[in-house]
Amino acid sequence: MGINGRNIQGLFLSENQKRLTREFFLTDALELSRRLIGKIMVHETPLGEVRGIITETEAYMGVEDKGSHTYGGRRTERTEPMFHIGGTSYVYFIYGMYNCVNVTAGVDGIPMASLIRMVEPADEASRSIMERFRIEDMQRRRAAREKRKAESAGDSGKSAAVVEKIPASLKKHLADGPGKLCIAMHITKADNDIDMAESRKFYLTEGIEVEESRILTGKRIGIDYAEEAADYLWRFTLI
Image 1 (cartoon, one colour):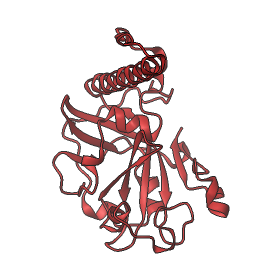
Image 2 (cartoon, one colour):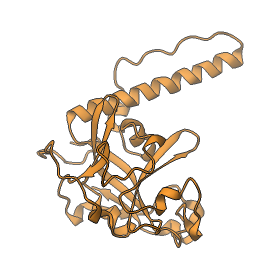
Image 3 (cartoon, rainbow, N blue to C red):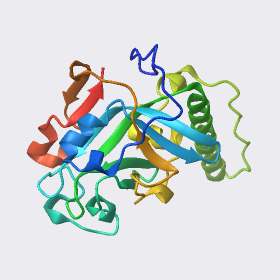
Image 4 (cartoon, rainbow, N blue to C red):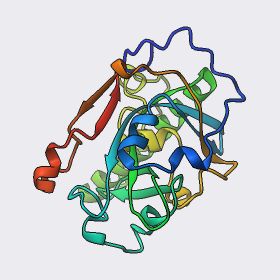
């Protein structure tokens, strides 16, 4: 079983998966978001190569989509990668604590992208690396909280306890959200505006075959401000 209970047993994923070329991305964000389900995102990290099977995406259709960062043609330093040719990474920071990774769709100058919301480890080596990154992040955040408490209490505080055993909740929810995904795959702002059709360190490959009946559509998450666009069924989830 996968980390979210999806049946991916019996899948044999070659180490030499055929990478996705430019042509794959030259479509609109709705089509790309559906196509990306089952594909593998590959990222070279300080701990080695990590590979995640994409299991949930959301489409952001650009200038006419009230849920998109580029609604109304908004073009800023932050959103500039969305205007780049299909296959470009768009990594942005939210809530002052998490990164989110997107892949652009279509031709240069048309700002559409697919948000990658969830992945599952494509192999055990990737799972081990993802767990380690999540544990290290958990420890950093715990140490920061304890430091703040100690400072407010006016004492030197204690060092954070080291997590020796991987919590069951972390195993179950290893990369099932855009923030957790980026932590687990060590995707940072340094990975923003990368041409994933050309890069050797951050790219996508063919993955598992997914039948249309296994792709559930739903509303996008966290865009209540987007008026009628909040109700569009532009989220795609492998079930």
